[in-house]
Length: 446
Image (tube, rainbow, N blue to C red; front, side):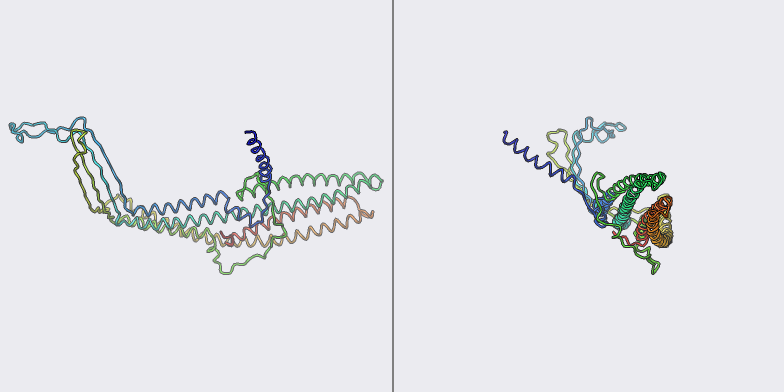
């Protein structure tokens, strides 16, 4: 017993480090890997796939309406008091005008049977069969739309983390440079070469930069958690990014060639499928004016006796087959108005298609303009940042040589920080605009 316990404890001692190591494992993803992960783990996509399965089951259910319907039945009756009827007395030799009470039936009755029904023709069923398959197509396209939306959400969240990392790197570089300047200025103050206000100005900049760094770190953690959420990862997971800002290619704004970009948009395809469903709905209501034909058959065995012990000794079989024709005549105008409403819904879909075409073309034009403006703004902010770095470098040289003031250095540091913030904002806007343009052009596939 003790030996077994020792072996178990030894095994657990080996397992716990492995479990701990697995728990602390950090997942690293490129942008495409993050998107692929989200496509198989994001809850919205998983639910969309479930909706596809529901649509498949709905199609099979609709098909089943036209298949033979078979049901079995059984019954047992115990007449505690057998029904009594009054019969003219002449039948039993009694005087005319008298009524004689007679009991028809027996105390115990039982039956077992089998019913079969087969739909032969029903216009609404045939149309419903087509509609169910179109509904399945619609569910597949809905899944595609969910995949595209997830792709966009993951990409934007991924870019947010990259931009936050870039912003943190710039702040760290500024802190390192500012720390050196502050140390040098403090030494110069101790030696009497500068005033106390020079040290205070740099200290204020340094403190502000440290506060900004803490804010960026918190924002970075929030962006990482948002990326995990969009990917379908647990918030407690460890996640790092493989891609860098420099890996992202900034293309020139795309130009439409044929003005038919809406044909590439999943929203337009979904609305076209909805139009097909509306047209089938019109056909379905029209088919309700047609007759329906079905075949039926049943067989049963009846058992009757006044004694329960002899109830099933004798069987009385019954079998019947036939056709049932149902012809609609008057429905109070309900079918007519249902048909009119279905036609109106189809007209609304036509109008929505035209409006969606115009909306998509407007979205593309806006996305192109915003993306092009963002590119120009990013280029300008990049030049301003490089220029601010050069101004700071020259200002510090002048200050070190005694021909410049500390106020000029502080102003240059502030200008550099402002230009870097403008660059980060322009960079983020450009990346988000790039995603929006790709989505508007229908370039994000599923």
